[in-house]
Image (cartoon, rainbow, N blue to C red; front, side, top):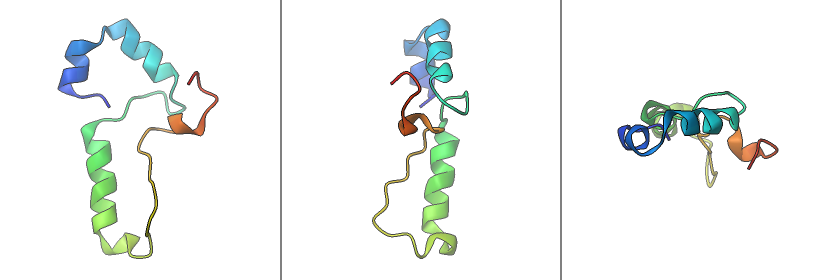
Length: 66
């Protein structure tokens, strides 16, 4: 997750390497997680139960340098 702390803790070149390990070629930001949570709280997700929903740009699919 690309937070202010991550920006301070990681060197820019390391962040670039991490981005390349994500199929969407970007790191998740807090707003991405907030959007997923907002959807889960909405009526649009009323039939979603007991699911794990990764907000990781496809990185957890595997095969991307994990």
